[in-house]
Image 1 (tube, rainbow, N blue to C red):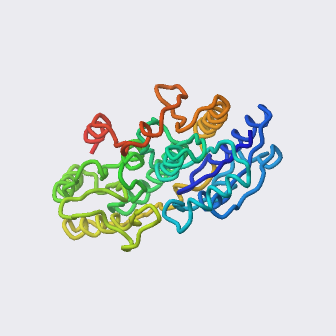
Image 2: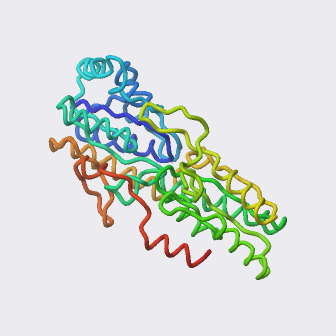
Image 3: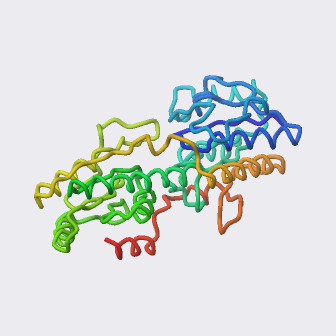
Length: 342
């Protein structure tokens, strides 16, 4: 087979580990690999190159993606589908492995339904919000970064007797804020799953001060719901190729409201793309390696329209429609656990 591989959407640590795994396993089986650059844009515009074992040597600990990425939606581009089909035919692609989130793999799902090309997806998103898998590539690495950031913020919060608000990624699900907040000892955690009441938060912060704790750490997901705000705060009104508004600014809003309502000096730290960068964790490297191997094996077996997932400590494959049917939200048991420590 000639296997195509692409990485789309936001980048995360360990993508290169998945690419490396695909190439190593494919060559072991006597297959060739063609890497499309810049996500789906590479397939539409025929951008890419063959990838051999030398090309992936040493990339396992390297963050980002050697193929580049974009938020391109070929189904929304003028003649995008026509150009995509021409590229696949020209490159003689027998099967395509798509490494990305629900948008990237959602396109793969539609291509499979139209019988244009066989596709196997690999879940990759630091938001960890793909419902078919318990872990997506990049989440563990980003979670470690959030935890370390909160650890560091504690020292300056205690020194200055401030409220420090840390804004982290998480459009529709609060996995990074919730578990990062638990691991990093946040005193308040705001997530998209549960609307937060700022009056109640401020009252608890006052009570902390009365108990002799004149500092607080607040973890906020970028898509957090706050009572009084009809929609999450966004940077502007523009949307990407998949219809997403660019969120950002909720941390500044929360910090300013806390200071206005309590008089406590408050500051904001926005982690932003720091969460995506750097070297991947050991867990992410192993997860990416297992996902890549299984994806090639599935194509060898003739499978299509499926995603490789982690379920109950096993690597499995589920149909796209089961893996992408909704957003994977934080479960109530984790939310209730966090409430005990605020």
